[in-house]
Image (cartoon, rainbow, N blue to C red; front, side, top):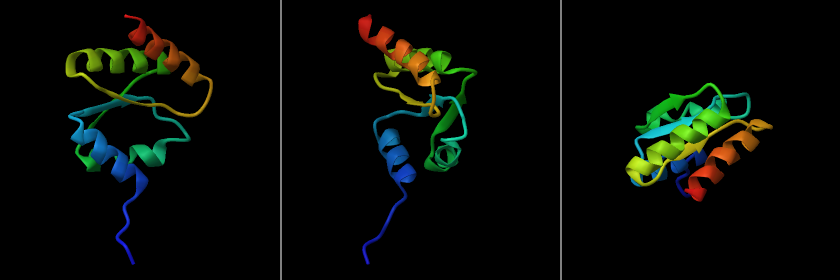
Length: 91
């Protein structure tokens, strides 16, 4: 049987390999199990009060570091996160 790795561990390992040290976002019902893997993967978690703020923080981080990671929960808040991401592409 081939060795297996959980999807969250793989994603966060690859994110760390990109040079990202902090994952930004908003915890919620649909991503809590995913977020349990952030710190054990060697990353820091930067929680935010809403999706728009998380998007702005991720944008600022990417402007300094070149790339960033944003994790939000499922729902209408993603439309706010998309506004911040679209704004970062517009500049």
